[in-house]
Length: 211
Image (cartoon, rainbow, N blue to C red; front, side, top):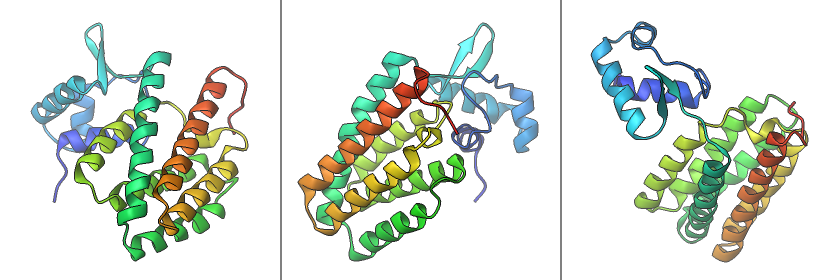
């Protein structure tokens, strides 16, 4: 099924084709994605209502998150991700648990590699935990949160030393889910998100370097 203009533009932002602050021009988007300008205009209006794009004078640009917005986003993400892990410990199928374990082992081999590939692998890992919660309303809310995460210009996996630590945190999350220990899974995932947030703050403050 062909993707609509909204999905195409959103995926381009999430995939890093467009970064916070980049101008989004109707005619250029229409040409890039092979659609007419009307659906592009409607898609941009929709993205504006979702705060994914914002106005800069007469232009539309990809939005960015300020310090306070970042704090608010991580506060919500920490609780929702923790809840997803708790529910996954209760409701994940054996197949979902095995795939989560295999993801950790596969991603361990990527440590020290391309931060963008590690970031994509991280998104897949978290997405499976969301789905393994078997709660459609929680998944919907986490989709919104992760959409907003695309408004951050860099991934915390680009920080020196973060990738190996993060994979270790993933290992502990999966171990708790394997043990069907909802509280341990909740706490492990909250710690994981908290440390990712700390890393991002240190990068933004210039304390940590990016690879």
